[in-house]
Length: 248
Image 1: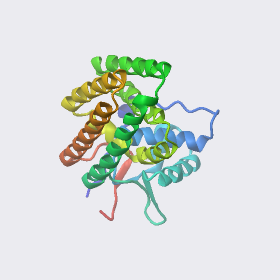
Image 2: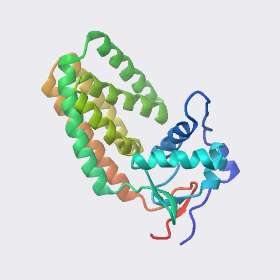
Image 3: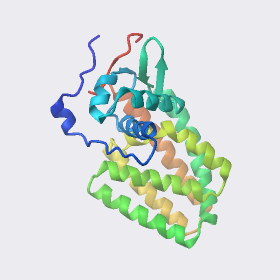
Image 4: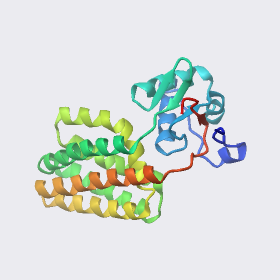
């Protein structure tokens, strides 16, 4: 099996360079950078990480990189092996289906609770986030769209004011964010998703908990279906700083 192609200097120059700061723990910041790369598919799943290439790409030494990989192992995004080094965990169709079934249940319950608990100021903030997200969609700006989309989901969960639900959801989202980003790679699903967000906002303004629950459950289940479809269609590895795992 041939190694996955490593980006050339010209290829890497086209990618946004991470902005590292000294204001937060360095290893955690490196972990944040790597997590975003995994979510956006810049580091494909299943391959062994080539530390030298990643160090060059994000301009860090091997020590903080290895510390960051340990943090991502706790999140279930990276697998560390004493003999084979580190690799990005694969995301299978079965895992995606199971994960989004649970998330659909949690977030639909959160929406049902949030409709009756969210205050006018927070609802206005949610309106503003939704409008900005729609503008990013109109310009087909995937990354800022995705960030606002994720923030809207998290805001609705927090508005449920249920600590157990919020904590459980936060743990699941460590792996689900990669799936959510994959879903917007499908143009039809992206358009459909915006319409579902608009319907959810209408339910919030109507203070209709049952409608909010149904709309949000359908939204998350459809996202899960799209992720499974994307995973099924992926047949070629992406170019990134990994090489195939010898164990297959």
